[in-house]
Length: 192
Image 1 (cartoon, rainbow, N blue to C red):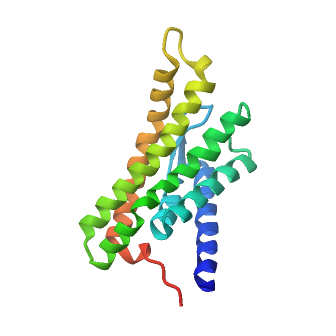
Image 2: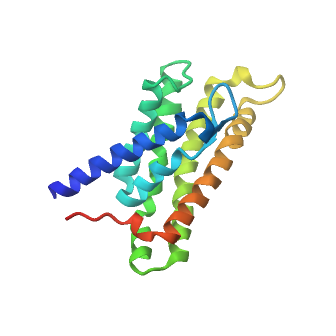
Image 3: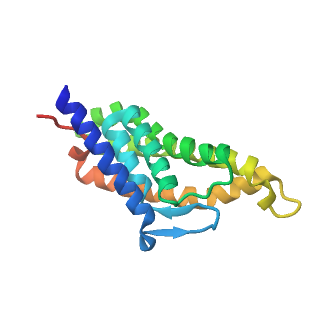
């Protein structure tokens, strides 16, 4: 039990730090907007934690990544509530990918590569949708002034956030799907 807890803490810490590093290295991300939003590989480590450790690990890793973005000054924050929604909730919700962790582990044990990929895609979509909804709500509520004249704030936020979330999620699905199709044991935890 103790070694499982230690492995959990170590993996969450290392993969969350990797998410931050992938988000901070300029040549590994394509920043679309000054107010935030970029296409990068940074969500991948959080999804890996979610698939390996389930909801608890995924939610914790996402929360820590959001906090680290604020701590490193890589966050665009107007006020407390916007910061909470855009960084606290949004990145935490990436961990919802862990909802399919059990199914992913079963597919690995049964050596069913197509099911592994299927559940990885479903998990990434669930976690990505959670993050998107948070950013969409924050954009609609707090960035309405940025919308072009005559455009509804909700439509502006929808377009703005979809412009980077969709490509970033596609990248995550491809990379994680390929990684786990070739090395499915990476999804499994082993404690001795």
